[in-house]
Image (cartoon, rainbow, N blue to C red):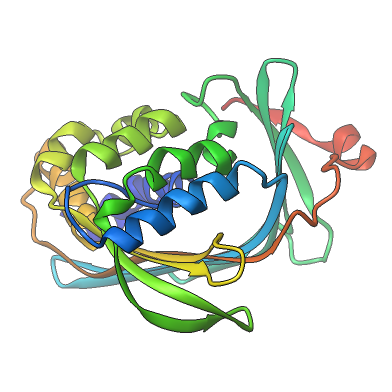
Length: 295
């Protein structure tokens, strides 16, 4: 099995996962710290008052197959509003020796449809080429549910008993309490289904994600809550085991032997500001020039 052939099929699925987990916390097993449970419930209540947020995000991945090593990194910034749900993002990506920097994305609702505008400097001249992708229910394109922080945090913070307080650290110049917990397999499936990513992942890697989830244990999550506001300000999710299981199944379904290992697949997000984003609108020149492509 050629790693690059497998990787090309899995890379889009990985990016879909990064987006799906872009604003999710965690849930799962019973037990944990009672004070942590109270803090998570308070965070859940505080999130209902959030109208917008700005954040930075990153993903680091390293895996091996048949003796070949592939590393991939994604990082960027995002502004998002909750009503209406809309997002503006920047993205930098390094994969298979290829570097794409300064990618811009707008995700907005147009009628009942989710529309994504993507701008990339394809020719290195400093001018971006824009495309438009439409997908209404998340089965194609990007579902706006992936960016609704209120729904995401409400879904996972209600399971706050899974967390344990681990001390105080500094995040964005302010003290925040660090909590450690897990995403249980059933909660991860719920995340993927609600974000519209389940069908994307199934088709991209030719693997039933239910089969992947059967092989994956609980996924570790670290979250930081601001000591003054109680709001989530940072999280780190370790998806290494999920990546290995996904790629092994993709290889098996392709009729190839699977010799896959992963050193790292970590997704992180850090909030830089709450309630500071104005209306997100796609500039008219982008609306006029974007070439529509099938989702």
